[in-house]
Length: 281
Ligand code: AMP
View 1 (cartoon, rainbow, N blue to C red):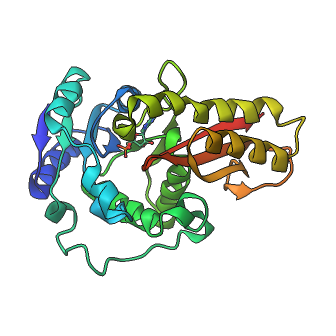
View 2: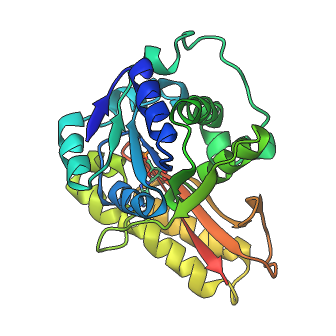
């Protein structure tokens, strides 16, 4: 595996590959890799001749400086995992490689309602940060295929919207959420949970299952109220429990005859977890 840190070096490799008619599947990450990331990478390997992974803890998408400071970083262990997956290239840039112009006064994208609701409401500026880094990484890596995780469902919609906005010919592949044996969605942030909170965290998954199995019988108000009470009783601070129309995360208060998805965001002792699940059909 080639490990590249500088943007100039990256361009040379990418140009060389494209000249040789390679196709590139790209998996952007912030490192602290786990099975969820590796599953995306395995999918990527099947979708193109070459696989590129990036590891970049993007300062521009963190609205909470403490979250940025505490974000787990272990690049050496990550490199070993990526080698084992036969990734062709790891791009692990410094901030100045991604933002040569600096990180003040960056451009904005018209993400519409997608950046105002749910994660957008609780993390102001987050999706502009995601759009800014994705634009730059896509411009540098020039992939044919982009693989991202359903775990961050709203992020997938934002990036799909960005691809349309920028008229980028990149095929978007959303990969299913990979879970621990007890159902907790894998996340780099899980390592920050205490042993006791780690056990409680499975309640988020159980809540999604509860919504899925009761969506035909109970009103949305009752479903949301019940799940919030359960989470609060276990010690979570709940940001949202909501049911949306899958295609545009329009929040719903009654069932529709289209795919629907439940999304939850909740924190326990300062560790914020998100998860979601298709609940209909
Ligand atoms: P991150 O490093 O958290 O920015 O995640 C990098 C990519 O991996 C994103 O597209 C995430 O949605 C995806 N991802 C993270 N956790 C999981 C998971 N448990 N299952 C599937 N994809 C995931």
